[in-house]
Amino acid sequence: MVTKTRKAIPAFKKTSVRAKPLSGTSTTKASELILSKTVPGLKGKGLLRLGSESKLELRDRLNMPRPIFGRVVNVSERTIAKVESETDTAEKLKRPYNEVYRLLEALDDVIEMNSLGNWFQEPNDAFDGLKPMEVIERGEIDRLWNMVYELRSGMPG
Image 1 (spheres, rainbow, N blue to C red):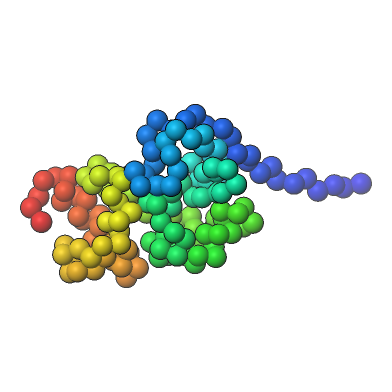
Image 2: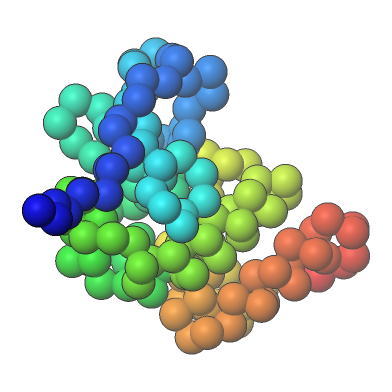
């Protein structure tokens, strides 16, 4: 008799109380116990769970609702909801999520982390009045990386 074995799904594990909030404006508080679960293929902690709510770590860090976050990572709100509810894998999300995650880590060196969520949504003269999320939507994320390079090296804009 042949039996199928199910692939083990990583369980949420308790993490210590956050030493540093993932986002200064996030709805989660630094003193609350967070459960985290890695999502295969995604950078960082993957899913965070506080109570009954699951949220992708990057979305929590940016304190963005699903529709706005979907625009930043170029996937549908539905895809994000499926990954957060663990009813789908993160295949469609891997590349854009990891690219934005890396960008966020680089921006953390030059911009205050708790202002990044708003920064993505505000028009910026450095991008001809476009919002950084619009720059990403147009496929021009290289402009953001160039800005990071210039800020790190001290080059005048």
